Length: 241
Image (cartoon, rainbow, N blue to C red; front, side):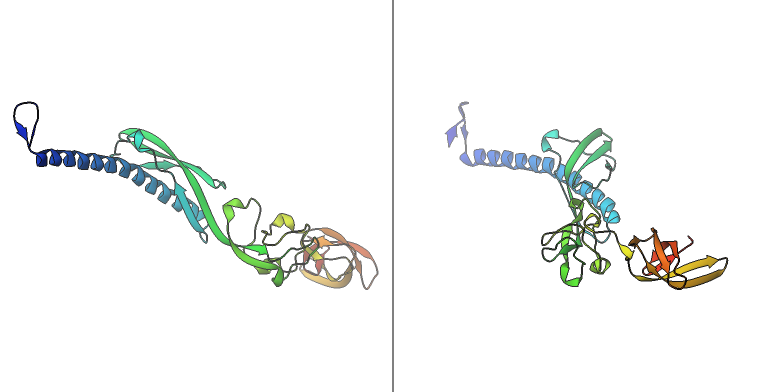
């Protein structure tokens, strides 16, 4: 038993009980204050997931935001919180959380990752390499960090030619590929010519390389004449469009 300075004693258990109550109350207040920012963070992440999972439905989407600081002491919103966000290709994102009653707005920042199997090289490949199955592998990649057109199907690249040297395990993008030639100089081709509803086909030899839609010189095998024709598909050119 101790004196409290007012000439009546105070029991130790009483002091301990009061101190314990104050500590518990303080912790409860802090926990309550930190729980609301965490709830805002979760709602903002759910909102972003609904946006970006539609954009890349086959991707494994991960979203991580930093919660608002508890020091902001945001009052609990009496209406559903609304969110404003302008989707972009960037990995770093910002989103505004807004409350109408009471009125407040807070910004959250973080990152978005979207993982897809993307075609990579399996080994160092030289410029001019004609790609085959042994050169290509699918590796899960955060495509938000790939700033060029990438591929998710290896077969789409079979027979394509590299226009630059690539190291092993590098993403193959459209910019690393030579033009997709459907006809090469010296190829035997079919020359198509339309006359109304009638389609005439003749054999010929390509005198130039050509991708789809390009007009090239072709020699008619039968007449020996050189004609201008548009590349329409592999081994086929058309004198009319």
